[in-house]
Amino acid sequence: MEERGMSRKIALLSNVNMNALIRMLKKDAEVYEAEGYGNELGILMNPASSYHAFAPEVTFVVMDLMELLEHELDMESAKSRVENWFSAFESAMTDSCIYYISDAYLWGLETETACTFTDTAALERIWDEALRVLCERYANVRILPYRRMITMLGEENAFSPKMWYMGRILLSGEAQKRLAVLIAERIKVEYRTPKKVLVLDLDNTLWGGLAGEHDNTPIQLSEEHGGLAYKNLQRVILQMQKQGVILAIISKNNPEDAEEILKNHPHMVLRPEHFAAKYINWKPKNENLMNLAMELNLGLDSFVFWDDNPMERLLVQETLPGVTAPDFPEKAEDLAPAMTAIYHEYFEKAVLTAEDKVKTAQYADNAKRVALQKSAVSFEDYLKQLKIVVTRVNAAEHVARLEALLNKTNQFNLTTKRHTLSEVQEMIQNPNKRVFVYRVEDCFGDNGIVAAVIVDVTEIPIIDEFVMSCRVMGKNVEHGILSNVEKCLKDEGFEQVRGCYIPTAKNKPVEDLYEKRGYECLVETSERQEREKQAACRYYSYWLKTHNLCGFVGEIKEEV
Image (cartoon, rainbow, N blue to C red; front, top):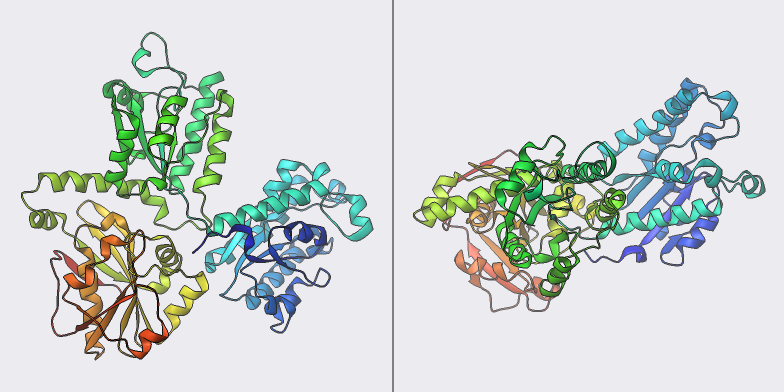
């Protein structure tokens, strides 16, 4: 999926006047413009409305809670109004659109006298809880962090009573600018490919001072003064790791000195288990980065390198241009804010899946697999020791992960087609499609949902798409998966299957997959191939006669 940013079609709906904000957004995007405001539900629920004719890809719904409640601050009345709004909204949703709905900020001139802070928070929680439930129920619903924007700006700067009286314009000019930036950032996050690995230096980066000198000069890492700045930096990084950012260390130190601090310093927030890999030695850092990329089996454009030494950053930028090396702040108090900005700029995702939360452990387990391969007497012996288990799971229960696999996988991707979330959902429900999704486990742990195959059975079954995460490549897992797909098709009564390969700059590792499995390259052009003609597209055919494992060593199971 191309990263077009704000050039996508968007809609902004609200129960207050957002016309000025819509005009701001139109400078960079194609924006739906409703007739008036306050009829957001009517617009959504009417299939013949101009909104549905416009067909936005992303709809932002910014609601003022006080207007929704019609200034009625009774808890029971508020619950009823909020429940009715969400019920109507849910009935109007479509699978073809992504929805960002603002969280609650209750503001009105009467709240100073009518509400305590506790009452205000309780009313906001009614909305926020209903929004949370909706997000859990639907993969295409997100929370727009409206309250955080207002809080950072402050009520006096965010709201304009004068503009409210003049034209029902709730937000000040500055708040509208901030909201426009927030919307632009959400669009960017929604469609970009995020970075995967944060590579960290140690001395004067994760802590102040030098590890080898800490007996004489204690390193800066504490709950006070400059030491607290480094500890807060680590707290930010730990939260990033919990959001799926893979952490690694590349640092010039004596390993024993660095490991002692990592394991035993009382104020270390980040411990050895939080890092997928550690390269603590005196080798050039660009060399270590190359080795790290090979160990994790990731492209260099997946890495962000953070080091206090400008010469090290320059070396990496000049020798490994795919790696991102952001500037390092001069003051310790700016460390945590700078890392927060790095997270939003390079790593933040629109949707966090279960896979994301365990990525560091998965990549650390992969290092153990690499060590096992080096010690094994043969490749087959290595595969036997791994005890690989491939399990087919229910695609409908993993829609978000399936969409990510299809849109973010490049190396093991036979056709490199991209799909919206609604298109993925439609494929799962399409009677002419078979959507196979697989989890892979071995003796070291669970790799998670790592592969998907989509077969069109309209005519002779054809494998339209086959994607697999790079972290399970090189173990013949793909042959076990294809064997399962072929068996399922044969069980349905099909006698033949076809495969398709479209070469790209990145998917060369799979160019001979079908030949290895004994598929015959088709010379003739069928009617279907003419209809779906693509440059350099290769088609293959295979008769479903035998159960072809083709070197796969392991167990194949089905949960569905």
